[in-house]
Length: 158
Image (cartoon, rainbow, N blue to C red; front, side, top):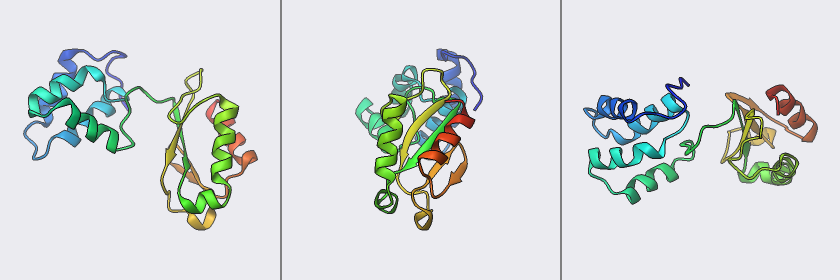
């Protein structure tokens, strides 16, 4: 992720939108590019996207909220995703997740005060045989228990 500025300017936003306008179906590429540039899809970009693509704010919100990886605020330096699918829940993942959130004093999508870790739900990491599973940044971890999760969080600086 390359952060252009902490608070994106109208010029930076417009440049990203315009660069993706020639594409067929440019909305998702625009949203991905904005998130790549700023660490999230800034609210300041919403009106420009809607005006450029002639869509409503409701349509834009529907797309952003449908895809779980789009953020409305920058994530922490590390993202920990806890699997919420059935196999992981059956193996204690739900209790593990609730315990973690309580321990950190966060809700889903929350970030620790020091900005080190954001906790997000994910629906299946493909490690059902090694449930419960988690993902730290791009590293998938199976058979997660409280001790292993504490170690992963310590490594991430939480």
